[in-house]
Image 1 (cartoon, one colour):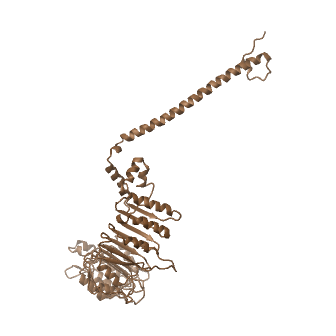
Image 2 (tube, rainbow, N blue to C red; image 1 turned 90 degrees about the horizontal axis):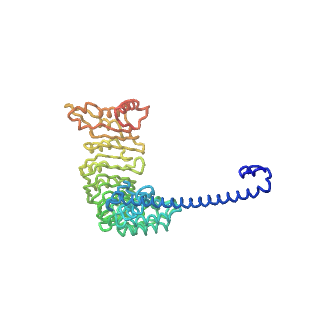
Length: 510
């Protein structure tokens, strides 16, 4: 008899097996299936065990993290110190734009405790800059309300740029702001021209801690309805701490500024006012340090000029800028004013009409003589009409003037040889330098220059003479550091050549 072939020899062949070998194959198959079932069972058990182990690992790891957090030194930092650390993370900007990657919003995303500490620190939410985006008005309102609510009663600084706001948004915005105006320290708004009424209705309720108020209305579109003027009341009761007031509504007059003995230090007004309105405002702001009126208009004869006969003395005023359409404005103000601390004066004629005659030289001379001020910066734009007027201004400010800017858009050239000769440093019989404005360091002439070629270079070179630095009186004449004459190569080749040489030594020539 032939021995029966084993199962592993039968497998893999395609030969038809005898009938007596089929039983052996069935037994082998059954055994293999049982073995496979045991393997699948063990795999299932192993997978379940692995899943359990992975879960346990995550739990243990989380527990380790929690223990480490509890043992971390920052956990032992007192709450007050942690709040100070958070506050130091803020940028130095006066108004903060919300940014999820910067404080304070970034601090709220670290952990629950930091989030709680952040929300409980009003200083983190005391500054906000917001800009209205179309389609996101409701989100902006929610952000403003939640942000300011976290500030508690801490003084806030708010900047809102809302040029495209509609009636509903403006109403909702001022409703939110009204609940926080009592602790608003700095307010800066850019608004449509028509919404001054809701603004004034809130501002006139009082802002007891306000220090800065900056309001700007956008110009009205052609054909837009111009609202009637309303009054803004600022006094020691409504805004006792207000130091800076800027109000800009070009082309409009949406507000009548009613200032009564306010402690305003800086005033910047850009809407139509007569010179008498300006004088009254200045009289009621005795603590002014900086003042600028950007749209002084022609006096129509109806404006009340009572109360301006007596001179106005502002002992602290250091900077004054006047932009006027009125031919008599500058003389009227100079005749009624005394500013002993004045250091910077800017006068701009907005008419641009040749021969308008806006400058009254005698009024300016008397003003400087009466004030006894040491004027350091003088800017006269489209004002002077003759070289003699310029010479008078130089003589009256000679002992203190550091910066002089003369600009003319009327086609009148007033800087000629005579004025340049006076500015040129010469020596007297004792060898001491003589000139007007010996402290002059910056001279901006623009297109106002009409001089003989070489005269300008002589003046500049005289102020760069190295021998001045070795003389005992060297401190009486300063180097002319910068000058910007408009010179053409055809008429001023020598000036251009010599000034370029001085540029290499450090002269700023533009």
